[in-house]
Length: 187
Length: 333
Image (cartoon, rainbow over all chains, first blue to last red):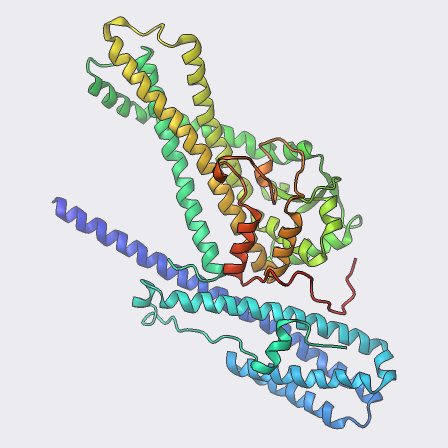
């Protein structure tokens, strides 16, 4: 009788531990998903600003068709990108193309003085900052989640219950140096 | 379980809080048992002929004694629940402000609330040069975030946002309620301990009946030790819980603002400048308050340096980034 009770208690405790570990993984995965959605919001906003930016710059920098076409192409590629790695790569390219467009202001003083260009510049810089923060937060969340599914006891069941490791939002080596110290957009 | 990042850090702290909180009912029941032993030893409660019998009888009496203790706790809590907000405001001299008075402050708080889909708490300001802030309000209607004038002057918008995020997390986590629960439990056990002290001063032994003299003394002593130990533990648990919730509020703020560096800078600025006059019941709610002595066991707040270290370790904060990055974006004041 006693041994039966002891076994029952052990089973219940183990069961509770598994439930607790499972719920924790769900919370961590949800946290990472949410953090990715936060990045997405900023990326979408940045994409939406680009037609305005191109429209504004076009009037002043008539001989820079190549630079403008590059940013539009990068924007369109970023808009259809799916998955963490693909998105990160597309956004890295878009960030680079954007810097190219904003750098045009140096060669065209009239553009530099244009009120809507200045406003766009400020808005893009703000988004860049928020992006840097959201990216850091996401990578922290992914590190948390990935580490937790590899830790005992979760490692025993995480894989079979569909907890797959997530990719970090890695924007590539070159842009990262500038992104770490936001803003990437220099005037 | 492994604590690797911000979220698991928060979950871990939450779990430890639950364990600490569970200690209060145990302590209160222990104290009630102690009270019965004392009363038995003094001859106010019926007792049996043997010492073992007395302990067993007292244990059975808990069926009535423990619910009585929890009933008192419930009534005490109900009184605190309805009166808390205004009591604290009166104690610190906080004045309510509107969106027109402080649009920048209001916007910062409102943006954080929108991101969590919660109603914006009201804002109060204490006209004091100290750097401090607190959250109060037990029910949704009373919820309020209070900051000092000094804080508004000294902090950059990002840092102020981090402090508001800290206070908002206290509200989201219902920490104000938790702290009242702690105060009520610790208060009741302290009341019992004080009554014991008085009984010892004035009535102790007088009614002790000679027939069972020695046994009566043992019952009294055991009960008294139970009460005193319970009192000490209740105070330790209360402050341990308070410190856990501070760590959680720091982490929760980073979760809201996504900016551990600003939280670190804000804490560094607040350090050594937080002294705001207020009664002891209020200070656990502050963003920072220094207690004194005994290796931090009776501090309501962890040392600022430890809080910064936790942000570096779990939230990916950087201490070096002392100055906010210049964005070229005009700061809306």
